[in-house]
Length: 494
Image 1 (cartoon, rainbow, N blue to C red):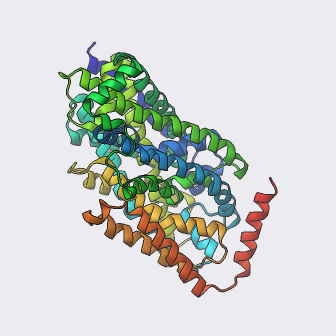
Image 2 (image 1 turned 90 degrees about the vertical axis):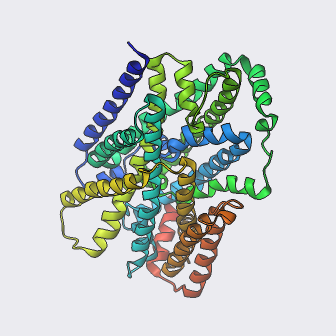
Image 3 (image 1 turned 90 degrees about the horizontal axis):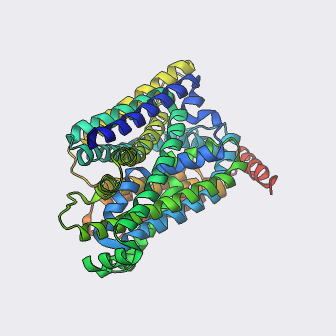
C-alpha cells in the first residue's frame, strides 16, 4: 500500500467520524435553542475543548508555526498574549455571562443578549451586532477554507480548489444538520487530535534532529536571532502581538460556549481544562516550527515550499504513513472546528438577530431551524467565493477578523457584565467606532505594520461607549433588577 493510500484512509476515517457525529447531533436537535446553543447542557470538558478547538483554527497548526519558522521566537508573543487573554476571559466573562444571559430573557445569541440587557426597543443594537458578526465571520470562515485548500495541496498534491471544496462540503454537512451540538461534539474530538499531534511532532522530531542541544545548534546555524524573543522587535510590535489577547472578550464563537455551560459553577473546572489544553498546544506549535528549522537545516536536500505547511511536512517525514495521516487529520480538525463554530454563530445572527427582527415571529421552531440551516449554506458559499483566489496568508485573514470582533464586541461585553450604566446608544456607537477603526487601520499598511488594529479599535470602542453612556444614562428599574439578580446568583457560590 502506498504512503498516499495510508494517509488517505486516515483522512477518510476522520471525515466519516465527523459526519457520524453530525448525524448523531441531528437526532438530538428538536428546537432552535438546541440548534443554536445545545440546550444549555454542555459539561465543563466539552465546553473547554470546544472553546479551544473553535478558537485555534488552522492558525494553530499552520499560521503560527509558519510565522515562527520565518521570523523566530519573536512571533511567540502572540501565543503569550492569547494564553493570558483566554485565561482572563474564563475568569471574568465565562461565569457572569452564563448567568446574565439566562437572567436576561434567556438570550441565546450575543446580539439578543445585548438587546435584552440594555432594554433596547429600537432593535438597532441587535441589527448592528448581527451585521458585524456576519461581516467579520465571512472573512474568518474564508481563512479556514484557504487553510483547507492549502492542506490538500501540500499533503496530496491535490488541486487547491478541489481541497477547498472537500473541506467545505464536510463541514457544511455536519454543521448544517447537527447544529451547535454537532459543532461542540466534533470540537472535542478535533481538540484531542490536535493536542496529541502538536505534542508528538516536536517530541519525536527533537530525537531525529539529534536531541535538544543539537537541535538548538542547528537553529543557531540558520540564524542565532531565531531563538531571541525580542530580536528585531519594537515595543509597539510586541504590544501588537500580546494585544491578540484582547480579542477573546469579543469573539462570539468562543464566548457563546460560556452561554452553553450546564451551570456557571462549571466555569472554573472548564477553565483549568481549557487553559491546560491551550498552553500545551501553543507550546507544541512553537516547538514544531523550531524543530522544523533544525531539520531542514540538517537535510538541505529536502525543501519546504510553503512555510505555513511545516507541521504537515514534518509529520509526513517523521511518522508511518497511517500515523502521518492522523497528523494530517489534526490540521483538518483545526480548520474544520473553527469553520463550523463560526458558521453556527453566523447562522444564529441571520435567523435569531436579523430575520426575527424584521419578519413575523409566530413561525414554528421547525421553520427557524430550517432557516438556520439555509443560513449556514449561504454564509459558506460567500466565504468560498472569497477563499477561491488563494491570495492571502491564513494569519493575515485571521488577524483582521479577530481584531474586528475584539474591538467591536470586547469592551461592550465587559461593560455590559460589570457596569450597569452602559446604555443602548453607548454600546451601539462604541461597537460601530471599534469596527470602523479596525476597517480603516487594518487596510492602511503604514498603520497596520506599526500597531495591530485591535489596540486602537478596542480603546476607541471603550472610550466612545463610556462617554456616550454617561451622556445618555437614565435609571431603569428592570436593568437594575437583572444586574443585581446576576450578582446575587454569582455570590451565592462564594
